[in-house]
Structures are given as structure tokens and as C-alpha cells.
Length: 128
Image (cartoon, rainbow, N blue to C red; front, side):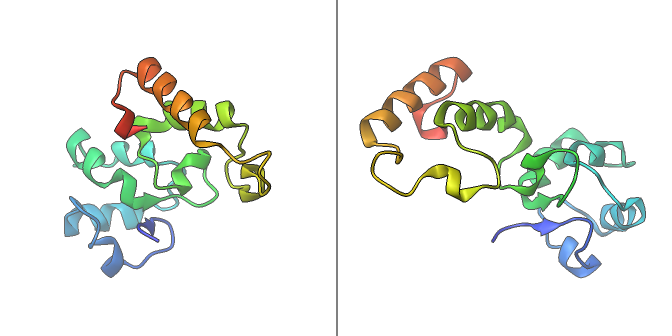
């Protein structure tokens, strides 16, 4: 799995996250526990570009935002929530995805959802 839990990883591992300098890593370590990815923005020296570059590689287990435990980048949280609702899936519950042919997402249904999401969120089908 890609990414590190910012509250439990070592300094050595945290320094491997894109855009995090040794100084920023030290500040993150001192700021633990971090309760959500957005909280990183309150750390001195942590700007919008750094956040954009590293957010998808940082995990927050058991924090305020369940999507912080996933590969989903914060800029796509609204899309992710919409898809979960549209597909009737529950975050963190793989059994909600379905295991029999009646509950799996058929290719035609997936294409319709993809087109609808792309139009609603103003993104390409490939980004959905």
C-alpha cells in the first residue's frame, strides 16, 4: 500500500514522502497527533503546493475524516463521497461492494455513473 500513517511512521519514513523537507518532517513529528490531513496546513512552512504534492501519500488512521485513511486526494473527497452514495458502498466495508452478480456494478452501469460524475464534477471520464 502506498502512503504512510503520519501519526505512527518514523521520521526516516516520513522523509520519503514527496515535498516534505527534513525540517517539515520534524515539525510534523512535534505536532502529533494529527487528526486530519487539512490540519497539516497549520504547520509553519506547510504551504498549499506542499499539501497538494504530499496529501495523497499521507494517511491519518482513526482521524476526523474517514477518507484521510485512503488513497483519495482531498481535492477529490466530494467526488468520492458522491460515488460511494451513488453505488451504495460504505467506506471501509468491502462487503458493501457486493459479491454476487446482482450487486456488482455492471459495465454499462459503471459507464453511466462515470459520465454522470464527470459532468457533475467538471472532470474527464478518466479522472472518475
